Length: 445
Image (cartoon, rainbow, N blue to C red; front, side, top):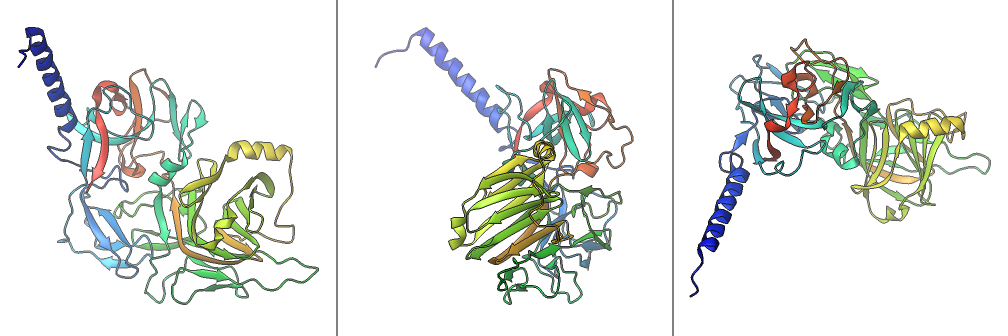
């Protein structure tokens, strides 16, 4: 056997030490010593100590913050609004366990929207979990619920929108209470939309025959929002930034129009399918495979789409988030556009209203319409984007102006915006520096 030279032994020893260093950096403290979330600032994505509740009326399951001083006497279901007694002896589940990749930022900086763990000066030697939104040498501001970078609204891609979305109402979980408020329903009584008998969240539109001189009207099913906060039930025309996790927090609720509607759809024959989100209306010609996006009567865009998928149900999602519009089929983006840019261009060259002057819109913030189309709509799901509040609960000194990040600084925010102590605080400690980064985070429960 050939003997190793002294130089080779030294090289092998150094390689072994380097490998040991890398392994120790990668595994500690994530996988060897589990790290747990101890606060509420990143809910609903990451939970701290919490109660797990499954609604007895609709079977919808959700988490409630257990770190607050005031223990709730009743817990409200965010999906159907029913109130249930809550025992002070209710089991408290520990916070989510985290996997920390400490090697992530050895050779690169965090990317925007990544969740990071970092050292915090408040409390001293503490560790904090937040999401990166501002990168070095950018100018950052938080206004109107959105993040602004260098004077422009920050726009998320679809994968980020989908990952951060918060459930507002899931129609698959229907309440068994006889007086429960119905969220989705036909817009009027004499309608071709009917509930499918075997499920409470499915509708079928069987179109009426058309006359030779008159085209069929657009028939709608509409969404009526109901807000449940601290035991109060309130019907409203706007979706708010309410969190089921913050059951005991008394605060101002903000309206948000960054919404996502999902539904399983199957259609038979030709006709048109419509999705309305606020002032935007998506028109889908199911015979020709063409689509149009309208906004306040102006045509913004026209595009092809795979209408031939009608042979089986497909999962459709339509979103208006960060002044962007997304049309998604089976998790694949079919069409997207920047609404701000399209609105400016359409205003210069108005195209008219597809619904006609005699055809009013649904009158709801969210609606699905059928025109001469035999279509089944199931599993309706309403979600919203994170709304970044201008204030933080219990904190007076907040940033009201733009902040210019230095070459080693990052601007971070929490997903549970009303309670998150993050870079919105007007202190030097609220800005994360490169030297304080501990690693990238994954959750494992």
